[in-house]
Image 1: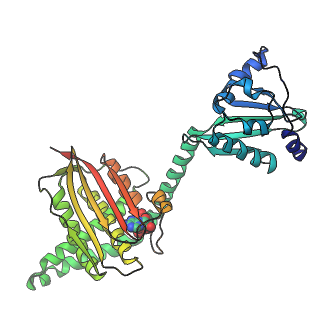
Image 2: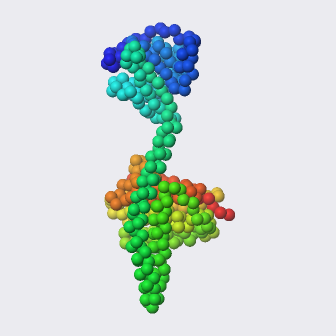
Image 3: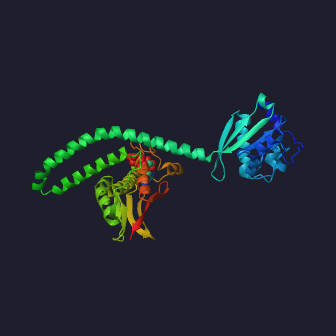
Length: 367
Ligand SMILES: Nc1ncnc2c1ncn2[C@@H]1O[C@H](COP(=O)(O)OP(=O)(O)OP(=O)(O)O)[C@@H](O)[C@H]1O
Ligand SMILES: [Mg+2]
């Protein structure tokens, strides 16, 4: 049946009465929120409603009486729309799918449905409906689902990690007098602070299915960056790369949760260290960290001369569980992005394959 129809669709057109539609049913079809196009048994458009000719940006008069080949050769039909019509026709008439979804030139999602068979008495009815809102709900549901999964996953990991951390914490406290004798009590303090931070990160993961409310305080940008660079310097040295902290204005202050902020900068520096280590030509890895004032905002940047990213990676970057690393969890950037958004800021990125990556965290400054 479909193949007979394919033949007939390519036949020359015919004159159809295209005047105003006057029956009640046609009035309903005329005003429905979907686009409707009816092809008769010979493949000629016999009815088209307002929505449909509006979508095609053509007049009713220029459509009624046309076959699909006439429609495709209409000079007033934009190239993009021709492609969409042809693609829908191929998917539904040739491949026999009953519906087909596409994205238009304005970024809106549409669903085309084909109704044919006995009840249509040889006619073919195409309906087109915008489904952008449903797509948005679908995407949000998918993201929420991923985040809920993340919550469950972290609950089990947290349980396993917290116990050894508590043991380490206890023993370090017991070692305190010995470290004091050696004049190395600072090391003990750093270990304890880092264990507490690890516990906080676990807690953050546990609550990541619900956006957590930051513990707001004043954070000097300089102290934040200096501290994180200090923490990562030895790891960077071991990996054979250099971290340069650029000089910047000392008085810039932001408001937020200092632990969460540290976690974000640390995630970005860790990614940078991994990216320079993965660079194929063995070039000396360099990571530049700095900040500058831009109007009422601070822009903190973390740049590397690592392996860079292709478009696909850039597109997926902030999605939970997206990773290109064998041992990555793909959570670093999705958690960081959420933290910065919760603080009223944003993270932007530019990157080139084999050249490097430039991340910028923008946050409102406190005056
Ligand atoms: N500076 C960078 N250079 C190149 N690629 C990067 C950089 N930062 C992030 N990426 C890419 O983005 C992906 C996601 O990063 P993300 O930090 O979210 O997860 P991950 O590093 O893979 O795993 P983890 O959860 O351990 O952080 C990485 O796998 C990597 O492909
Ligand atoms: Mg990471």
